[in-house]
Amino acid sequence: MGSIEQRRHPRLNVEFFADWGWGPECEYYDKVTSLSISGCFLATKRELNSGQEIYIKLTGEVAGTINLKGVVRHLLRVMEGARPTGAGIEFVNVSVESERKLQAVLDSYR
Image 1 (tube, rainbow, N blue to C red):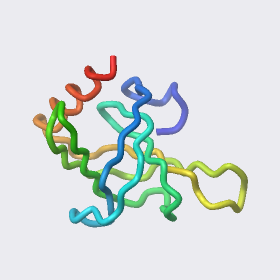
Image 2 (cartoon, one colour; image 1 turned 90 degrees about the vertical axis):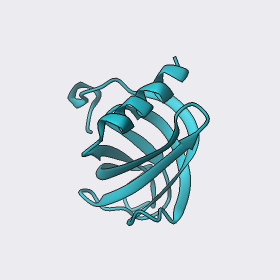
Image 3 (cartoon, one colour; image 1 turned 180 degrees about the vertical axis):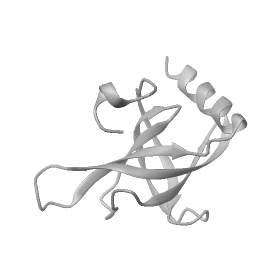
């Protein structure tokens, strides 16, 4: 993820909640504040580690349910030593169907 220059796809500001977790059951529920075909920003205070794999389930009217696997690429903290305020997630192994659904969601925000 990193800086804007390192991103493969442009991000759009969004605001919706998603289920996520360390397994496909996605036991947590937090807000997604930006989205692209290749990743998202998950606003959460839960402790995550860079490089950690997570599962994300996006559900909405536009595209139905999108099940994704991601890797934590960046942790955002307001100040050093503070709890995180979110994480940049890179989607991995995205199916053609999931990519199509993600594009539909992105198109609805344009």
